[in-house]
Length: 176
Image 1: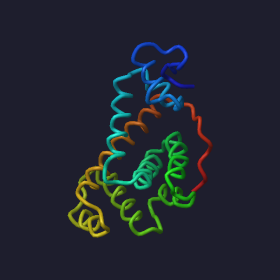
Image 2: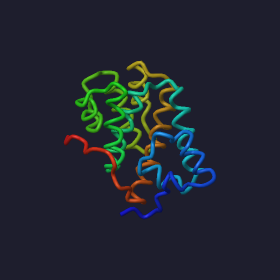
Image 3: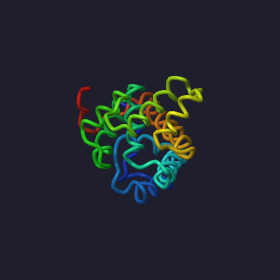
Image 4: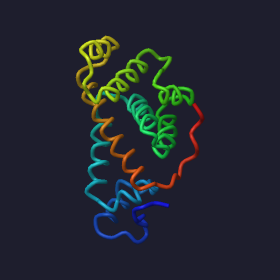
């Protein structure tokens, strides 16, 4: 049972109604039904996602980060959601499992997974060698900044789901 009120799109008022009828017109999933209790927080999340979609990391690359961080944080809701989103973005089911394990067969995606894991493990105090290795795999300073941004957004949703105990409305993720 969730801890926060789920706002029904049919009865939403004010800014919540505007969000449901605008950017969330086809996305009435449980995380957003609870997050919309604070339209400001949901606006922040949606704006950050939209901004990063225009960044240097591709959608499949961002999904690798989402899967790895969600798995590391034990957020079953986000793992399930992002397995589907990652497949829609072009990753195979095996790649979604690899991302959750933090070790990928594709060398460039593996460098991304390894760097993301290093940022998590060190709470951002990565070594010069870890940055050099990431750059040597073809990533840029913009990519480094965006990895941190995606991790930050991911932590927000993971923690939100833990606090809320969001009821999962996505199919189970494959075992890894």
